[in-house]
Image (cartoon, rainbow, N blue to C red; front, top):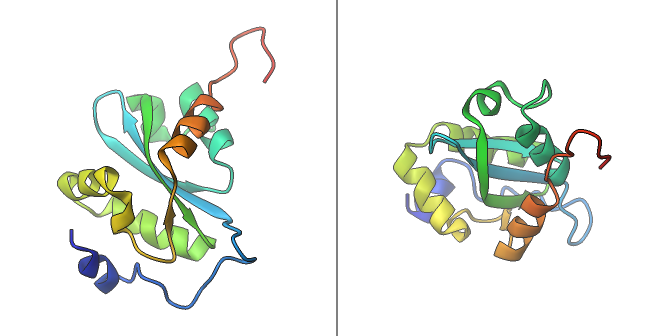
Length: 137
């Protein structure tokens, strides 16, 4: 999907800025599940939310409990819940091919979203390893 299409869908900046200079309060993320499907969500704490999804417990989304989670494939910073919810809604309504195009080039989602660096995705994924029985996290 061209960037201009994302703008038409209301995903470009509407004047909202992060609450403080450089402060991003929400994350929008895409997970690849065990069956190859993609799951999108929002959170304020990406490591916690990934741990919840990966644990498969009651706080994981029903979808990820039944489909499993293999990888964090995309991550964007969002300035507030409203903007994060708009991108999440759009992701939920995209065809798979469109989602894969955004995963391949997360910069296609314009302001007010900031794509996370690959190193940040890896760090978030690595910090979300669920605790094993008998271990504390």
